[in-house]
Image 1 (spheres, rainbow, N blue to C red):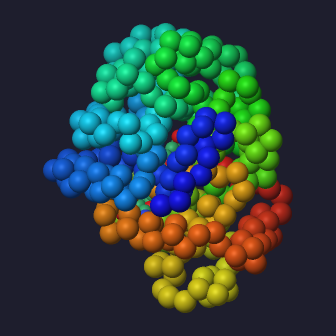
Image 2: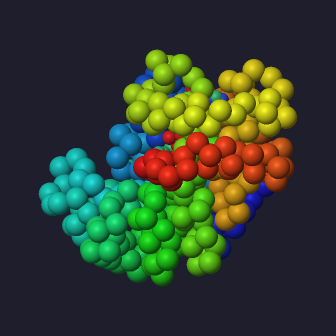
Image 3: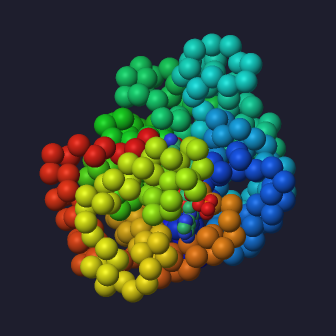
Length: 308
Ligand SMILES: NC(=O)c1ccc[n+]([C@@H]2O[C@H](COP(=O)([O-])OP(=O)(O)OC[C@H]3O[C@@H](n4cnc5c(N)ncnc54)[C@H](OP(=O)(O)O)[C@@H]3O)[C@@H](O)[C@H]2O)c1
């Protein structure tokens, strides 16, 4: 698995990362998911993204992967109120308590990158939440502070000297952050990890989408229909549902400045397909241009913002 620099952090991260949001849904299948994640680490994946607000996810990673802690770059997120902690969202008290809770659940003495989990631009600029992450960094609880979010807030965050990493949505049906956020991130040498990199697999029947994906996937389905482009138009053979995930993942990783794409799956077969897709490298410039043109043509007013 190829590695890329994560901006100025000094970390080298695998092009494919593990998005742990779906681990919040695990029940009897937890052991199989843990085995899958260990196998992904064996195969060279070294970036794991979780959050305070994915119920049980940090504890799952702590339980099953803390014995291999020095083998991966660990990213988590804080900001909103959580179980039993007093105080307003994004306050210093809540952010600090969430950082401490993350260390406990993840069974580690530091998180490599801690992100503010999608607050507004006003909250970012107010500085209290970011200030709490800076204090956590100075205390050695986290190595770097960052922001997970989109659009104007993510562009502002990428330009802030305390922010070393941005997590943002980029995919074939979500291209605004390519023009708004990536140029700032490249200029400031900020690491970019991408969420929703395969457009929430919006080719699937909506009834097969887990609850947390439904609205986002529905929006991407609408956008792709309006883009009116098929894998065959791009020179790819095969049934669209089989080929789109590969094209989508490679499109995301073709964008200059992207360090890693976090795919959220606990299904081994899909994880293996994603490894195979990434190993094929970036798409040709011609295919990228066709996908970018189709997006711009379908949304000439620029109304399709990055989905948070
Ligand atoms: N605001 C935020 O901070 C935020 C928001 C969204 C996401 N994230 C992070 O980013 C990660 C990734 O985003 P995401 O999970 O929303 O979107 P995603 O990775 O674009 O899509 C996940 C969906 O893709 C399916 N899938 C994965 N590989 C596939 C393949 N090869 N073929 C067909 N279907 C495939 C999964 O289904 P199966 O389970 O059936 O494989 C799942 O339904 C999350 O897990 C989370 O860590 C953060």
